Length: 61
Image 1: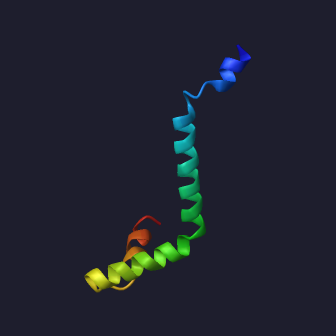
Image 2 (image 1 turned 120 degrees about the horizontal axis):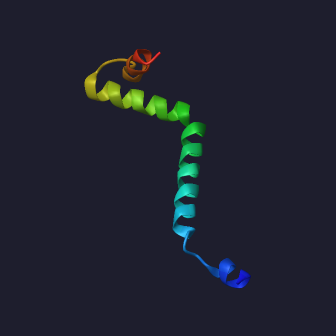
Image 3 (image 1 turned 90 degrees about the vertical axis):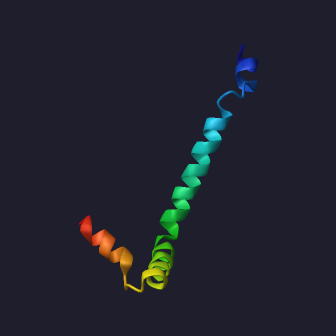
């Protein structure tokens, strides 16, 4: 019974997705400043408004 339990892979898909999401969240936290700068530059080039993400974040403070 123990051997069959250890060989059972029915929940592996869920575990893999949780690990991938955890890695993505970790990378987002590590590169938060770079991502914010990239989004600011993108917003500036699209709408020609400075610090577009600062305006959005100030609304939630």
